[in-house]
Amino acid sequence: MADPKGFLTHDRSLPELRPVQERKKDYKELYQEFPPEKTIAQASRCMDCGVPFCHNGCPLGNIIPEFNDAVYEEDWRTAYDILSSTNNFPEFTGRICPAPCESACVLGINQPPVAIEHIEKSIAEVAYERGYVRPNPPTSRTGKQVAVVGSGPAGLAAADQLNRAGHTVTVFERDDAIGGLLRYGIPDFKLEKSVIDRRLAVMEAAGVRFQTNANVGENIPVGRLLADYAAVVLCGGSTIPRDLPIPGRDSKGVHFAMEFLKQNNKRVAGKDVSSELPLLATGKNVIVIGGGDTGADCVGTSNRQGAASVTQIEIMSKPPTERAENNWPNWPMILRTSTSHEEGCEREWALMTKEIIKDEHGAIKAIRTVRVLWDKDPETGRFNMVPQEGTEKDWPCELLLLAAGFLHPQKQGLLEQLGIGLDGRGNVLANNYQTTVPKIFAAGDMRRGQSLVVWAISEGREAAKSVDAFLEEGESVLEARDQGKLVVNA
Image 1: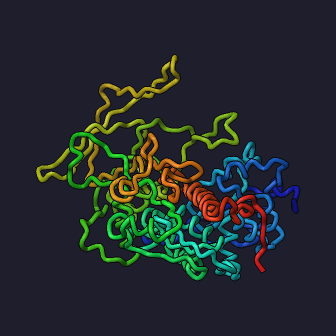
Image 2: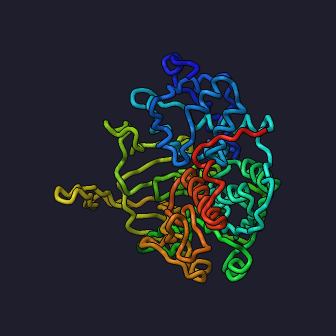
Image 3: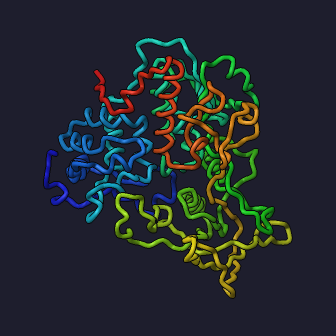
C-alpha cells in the first residue's frame, strides 16, 4: 500500500455532473472532466485490506487493491494489465455497473467506500488514450469454429475469451448493430455508443467475426449452426418482459420499457425509425411502472424528449435511506437516487396499479392506483400485500411505460428448435454452462435470469472456459486468466 494514510487524508470524491438544464438537452455523457491527480488521490484511499472483501463483492473477482496501488503510483499500464486480466470490458462496467464491489469495501463500514467504479473507468480511458488497448490475436488457431448467439456483454465476453484461446469465433446478432442491451437498452447518456464501437473495432481486428441481422431460428437455420460449428454459445439474454395484466392493458400508449428505449437509441444513432409507431414522451404525462435502473432510464429519456411530467411508481415500500446495521458486506437495500431522478421525476412507493383508463379513442388517459401495505406474516416471515381502502387515485397519463423486469428468454424460434432443456423459471438449463445438448452452451441472462452487466461478463468468461475445455479434451488455456494470473503485454 503506497499511502497507508490515504483513507484518512482524502474524502470520497467523484466527477461533478453537468448542469441539469444542459444535459437534458442532449444524450452525451453526464459527467465533467476529473483531473487525473484527483483520481490518484481516490486510489490512495484503498486500505489494501488483509482480506479484501471487494474481491468477493465483484462477480469478476477484479484484483482491486492491486490496480488501486498501481494508479496511486501512476503506473497506468500495470493498472490496466491487472484490471483487464479479469475484466474484458472495464470501459462498460466503469460506466454502468452498480458497483457491488463498493458495497463490500471494508472502508465502507464507517466511511464512504473507495470510488472503485470511477477508478476502473479512468484506467480504461487512460489505456485507450495511451494505446494500451490494442488487438491481440492468438499466435495460432485451433481450426475449430464457435458460434456465439447474442452480442450483449455475455456474448462479447465469451467471444473475446474464445478468440484468445485460438478458436475462430462468429457472433450472431439479430438486430442491425452489435451490442445487445448495451446498444439498444441503455441510453447514450449512460453509455455512449462510441464506447462500444471502439471495443468492437479492437475485437474485430483480433479476429472475432460479427454478423448482424442474423436471427438464428428464422433467417439463420439452426441446423446450419449445428453442422458448421464445433460449439454454440447461447447468450441471447432474458428478453420476455413482465407484463401488467389489468383492465385497459390494451390501451394505446402502453408500452414495454425496452420498446421505448430501443426506438430512442436508434433515433439518437441517426437510424430511420419512420416505419415504427412513434414512441415519444413529448408533451405527455409519463408514468413509469418499476423502480429499477430500466425505469430510471425511461425517466431520463422522457425528460430529454420534453415530457410534461414524469412519475415513477413502485409497488414495494420505500427503502430506507441508510444502510442497515450488520448488512456489510452484502448489497444494501437502500433508497437509490439516479441522475435521471435528479433531472425531474416524482417518485411514489407502495402503489398498485389497478386499471388503465381509456379515452373515447381507446388511448390511455389515466391510471388508477391504490396504496398497499406490506404486512409480515409472523409465522412464515413472508410479506403480504394488503390494499388500503379509500386510497384509490387516478393519475393523468398519456404514456405508460412498463419496466417491471424480465421473465425468461424467448422460447419461440431458437430455443424450441434446439430442443434444449429449461429450468423451472423458463431459463436455459445448463450444468457448468453446458446445456442438455452437449455442444451447446449458455451464459448470461438467458441462463441465470435477469442480472447485472458484471454478472453477464463473468458468465461469458466462465462459459468460454467450459467451451474451451470441451473442445480441447478437458484442458483450457483460459484457466490461468480466470485465476488472476497476470500476463503483461509486451
